[in-house]
Image 1 (cartoon, rainbow, N blue to C red):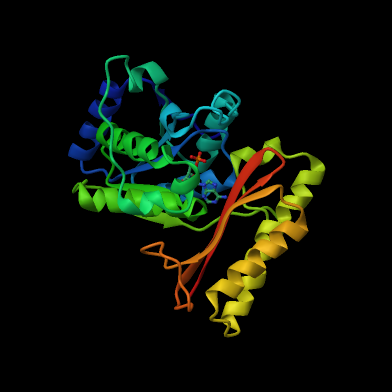
Image 2: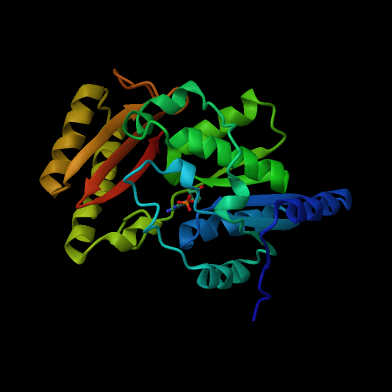
Length: 284
Ligand code: AMP
């Protein structure tokens, strides 16, 4: 049986611990998560365990990145199961603070996220990346990692965090890990448990659409408008309930790429029933 990770709730205790580990010459990796862990999260944990001496996974369902009416209260929470999975991945420490500790009643400072946060996700979830940037910076200040691991699944999130780190001179290296998918191609997400059997079938359209237009672009299609039109049509034909965006963008600026100039990122956000799903792929 792998040893269970040590769970720390207190920011000062966390910072004291990693400070002494770093003073002893250890390289510290951090894997920020909201819990309800799956193979996607665990791939980040394993990447950190492989690259660093000590891995701190954080589990915190961050209220400030949810808008009113989103799924904050029903977001899955399963700490005991998560700890078991993290133990198997070789993670030594878990930082699991309370919301009141992270946001005491008198706290009022937040990060204004970079410009790229206003596009795509930002158009539909205007307060989301402010919440993400603020919690990620707080976690970096508390854990003080040398390296932090994020998933390409949240493509715009990594772009926002990477730019925040550059703009604010945060001494953390950002690593991006590939999207982990189920055997049927659906990108793993903690929100997939909301899907009924029929909805899950519909959700497969997302990856199928990405794969289809990726092939078209690889075969020479350079008309961005046509690609986006085809993406939207495939998603509608596949039965998604609504489309927030289907976009072909420059991976760095997130500006739409038309005519298409490689590399491009294909990004999709849709609702299947009441569940919002995102996915993407990069064509090089
Ligand atoms: P979350 O718990 O949803 O905030 O995700 C925590 C981290 O896991 C983020 O960096 C996500 O991008 C990453 N992640 C989530 N799903 C996947 C996946 N299917 N493949 C790779 N990374 C993922």
